[in-house]
Image (cartoon, rainbow, N blue to C red):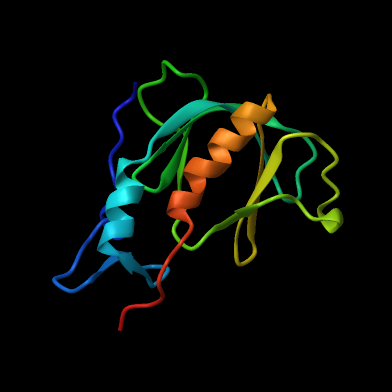
Length: 142
């Protein structure tokens, strides 16, 4: 499996009960939740679609350290891109999204929207469960 590295802008901690984990989003979470998110991992092929695109792109996706890492295939050394998930929500597409495929989940943070499609109900459920570990946040740290 490719090596995963955290960017310094989303991996710090402080001495209090909250860990400030993503300064550019002002997102903090409880240390026990951070520990849980850091221990959750998943990988597999998913199809990705941006909000305003028409096609689906097949990518090897690795979830680690509350971040999705995207690769062309499972044997690539370096990711094409990464997406820190703190502050995102996960759920089913709405009717207004116009996505009429099975096993699709939607990731959204403000106006940033991504759709991912799994190949089976089992895979869909597995990804939804693991992604929810990165979705909860406890507010901004001042």
